[in-house]
Length: 414
Image (cartoon, rainbow, N blue to C red; front, side, top):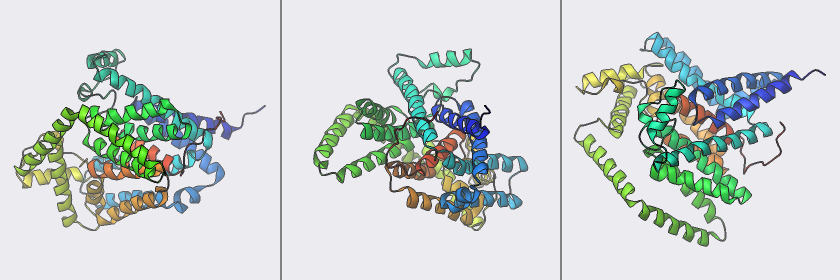
């Protein structure tokens, strides 16, 4: 008996997507291969069903993505960047086109359910290792030796903090989403295990990891959960329990909270004293340069891949002596990045993309959470420029676009 080609293709597509979800905090190389294989096989599924218009045009979120990519491509015609810089930036933003395809793939129930379960499994492994590292049960040097044994480069920035294979921003962002996923699983199944995993991820992000963006995101997600409970008739008991637990956590970690408060104040003081060699200081400089870029070329911007040239000119103009690594294409702000390259025209399309995210996804808890993550990350990071954060954002948005009020706990087809 002959095997159905498209049946095999769907299996390859589904398992590639699941592996990508599983490895998001484990291996950058695997997620790059996994997402490409998922997209290629997903395109075959779309071709078979002839769903081009439905996927790319009729869905307004996907349509704005398509328009934004066309704007990036058009901006190459007047870009001040070199050919290599322009193509390098285009390669990063082209991954936005994965969203419509992943959206279509995750409409298949068994793929979506398997992807969620694989995501939880992969993140649980990393979170467990993160706790072992935090309590010095496993020392960072052990990870470095193991990586060297495998022929991998364990980056110096992973030796500090609680991160395992990705830096603190990615670690915090992914575990923030893991927090809401496990919470919703627990809420649906009344599972103590999922409640425990949700709490452990919340604690990991808020008190152990070193990422201000993640602090803001996890705080917003907690507020969303509180708001959802306020609609319940028994919300008073839940609210009182939450307040008591929050006070215990804050008091128990007051040293950490006080240290972070002092660090934030010191960073703000440095900016006031015209010293910008801090994370917050650099973001301030990048943002100020971005505003100047809009003033210079407000309509269509400076072209794709142009931010590095503009920030170099800004440093020279203002006699700022910063390290060479600060001359970057990544201003750590998606609004600044897009407006510099494509002007107010491209920024309007990106804002339209966010508007349709809010309009279409606000009705579910996952949708609200993804909206919060995307908006906060857009202010403090160029989420579609960074490789791993971009791929993870693609997966989050595509999953949220399914508009799941909960999770479909079904028997897998494969």
